[in-house]
Length: 325
Image (cartoon, rainbow, N blue to C red; front, side, top):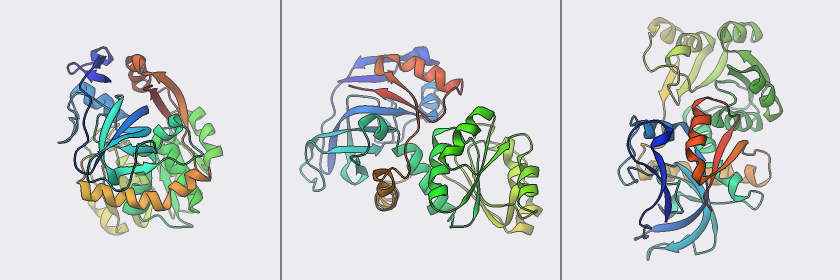
């Protein structure tokens, strides 16, 4: 099969499309013929040698999300049969013509989505859903601050929070991305430089109930300031640095809850729980088009290096997708 291969740690030039052995499904595994795969910043980190694949995933084939159809099943599979359209979140290996997955980690693609749209769903929508509702317990009527509003996770989080009845605040370094996020449900667009001050002004000093952060250290102090009493913050990435000072007094005074979260490193059992909840609560929203994946551009597999360069330069609003077929 054809697959994107990281030939050595480095820049986009180390990526090549090569012929590699096709995996065979065992036990409760399903082999999927991949038609499209999403690109994520984790792929850039893995390519650079900073984010190795977890055990059980290919060490040199990136790709955390995919969409296609069931090609073959292992002898213990009960949920799927060849020909069914599926999408999923993987530890790696999604940027190839075939991938094998535990059957419980696959999701049926709603008829409303084509393969390219479906490939833009698993990583960003499952990450946003887990962070907002399973980790931060966001509720109707609450206020949520979503950083990197124009990113894949940001565009998904804005839509999910809006549908859930929350008031959405968002930041971006690019004013144009904030304008494009408003039709998705962004209620309040904020400049990144002084977002805490603006949040407090707009909320009468009460702050927000939840912060969803992909920036890290650079925004930490302002995040603490922007959160209200018993606020919750979830860290998903460290694009602005991983180390910063903590005002422990503010944490105590506001009784804040702070969590770090990743999906890739979780156990199979934990991933099955998230997948099941997502299947029940979010797939119906995708099927009815109440929420939808936002796609900036689609690249053929052979242009993987160009896709990496575009993501590195932060040019995209929403997702970059690779066509595998």
